[in-house]
Image (tube, rainbow, N blue to C red; front, side, top):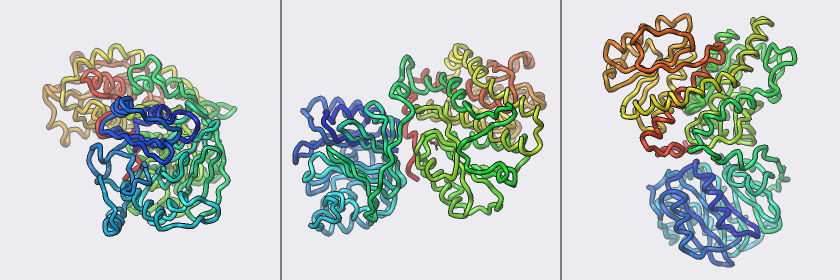
Length: 617
Ligand code: G6P
C-alpha cells in the first residue's frame, strides 16, 4: 500500500521518479506527488488522482533536479485531496517526506508539535512525522559518530514512533542526499551506476539496475551521490549485502495485452512451469524443495499443519488443506492471518506453520508469522517476491517463481500457490501412505498442469461471449464442492473486486441454507460441476436453482453430459487429476470476471479502493 521512490544521481530525477511511480501505481492510486531538490530549494507538486494526473501537472512546470522523492497514495489518515497527498513538507520548509505505513501515536505527537508552534496543512499522520524530524533537527546541533545531522534527526524521530513506515526524506541543508528507513513496510535500495534509488519494490528500479539491497526493519539508509551507508536505529553500522533481481523490466510490461490481469491470466502455463522446475525427485515419485530447512524426518513426525494468509492466498490455503488431508491424511487448519494474530488459538506442539503471500509484505500475514514464531513454532513461507519481509523472517520456504504480478486481482500467483500446495501434499503423502506408483502418477499429473491450463485458456473466446451476456447482472452466486468450494470463493472474490458485481461463493449444497433466497431470474449461479463421485449431488443443487428460474453457468469437464436444458451456458475444462483440477478450474472464473469487468468498462488493473500489497492493518 502506497508506493515510494527516491532518486540520487546524475540524471533527471523527475523522469525517473515519474516512471517509478507509474510502475508502483498498483500499490495505491488515490493521489500522487513528487518533490525535487535543486540546491537548497524544494520543488513540490502533488495532486489527487492517478500518476498520469501528476505527470500532466509536472509537464506544466519547469521541474529539474538530480535528487528527489515521489509517492503514490492509498489513503489511510485523511481523505483523497491534494493537501493530503505526499510528499509532505515540514512547516519550517526544511524537510520533505514520503511515507508508506501508519504512525499510530501521531495524535500525541501532533498535540506536542502544535504546542511548539508547528503548523499542519493536512490531516495525515505523515505530516506529523515530517514536522517531528524538523523539531529534532532544530534541537540537534552536533554530529554523532561521523553520521550527518540529517541522519541523526531522522534516527532520533523514529525512536519515538509507534507503527509502521517506509520513508524517504529530503533536507534543504543536504542537497543531493536522501535518508530512508523502514519498519514493517517494504523498502529496497537499488545500487546503479553513479546513482541510488530507494523504492517500495523492485519494479520501480529494475529498468535502471538489477543490484539491490533489501533493507531490514529498523535500518536507515543514507544516500549521497557517491555512496550509501546503512545503519540501525541503535546507531550500529550495517554491511550491506547486494542481491540481484532475477527478472527484467520486460517481465513487468504489458506487451500486447490490454491489462496486466489479462497478461497474467495467459502467462499461467509458463508460470506453472517455472513454479515446478527442479522440484521433482530424480525417481519422479515425489516433490522436493530446496529451502525448507527442515529434515524429511522432522517433516514425517509432524502431527498437524496450520496455514495463514489473506485474500486470494487464503483460498489457495483452503485448497491445500483439502489436498493434504486427502492425500497425506494429516489434519490441517487454515485461518485468516488477520484473525489468527489476535485469536490466540491453541496449537498442537507438533504443528508446522505455513504462511502464503504473493507479495510477502501483507501486514496481517507478516504479523501471523511473527506470532507463530513468538510461540516457538517453525514457520514456512510460500511467497513470490524474493527478499520480501515474509521470505526473510520465515524459517524456510518455497518461492513461487512466477515473476512480477502487477494486476491487483491475483491470478498467476494464485494458481502457482495451488500448485505448490499440491506439491506439499504430495511430499508429505509420500512420507506416509502414498505408494511409489501413486506418487509417480501424481507427479505426471502435476507436470501436465501447464498444458491442461493452456487448453482451458483456449475457451477464452467462448467465455468472452458469455461475459457479454452476463455483464448486466448485479448479483451472482459461485457454487462448488470439496476442493472447488475454495474456487467458488475465489470466483466470487475475483468478480466483485474488479467488476463491483455483488457475488458470493458457497459450498453448492450449503446454498439451500440461505443464498437460495437470492435466486431469481436476475441472480445467475456459476456452478463447478466436474465429473466426480458427487456429480449427481451437484446436479441436484443445479436443479434446485433452475426450479427457481436462476440462470446457470456450468463449468464441467470435457465429455461430461449435463441433463438437457439444465445449464444456460456450459464451459468445458479438461479432465484431470484431483490435485490439478483446482488449477484448471481457476481459468474460466478468472476469464469470466475479467471479461465481465472489461464489458462493464471497469478499470481492471486498478479496482476502486483496493491495493495489491496491503501493508496496513
Ligand atoms: C490484496 C490483493 C489480493 C491478495 C491479498 C493478499 O487484497 O488485492 O490479490 O490476494 O492482498 O496478498 P498477498 O501478497 O499476501 O498474497
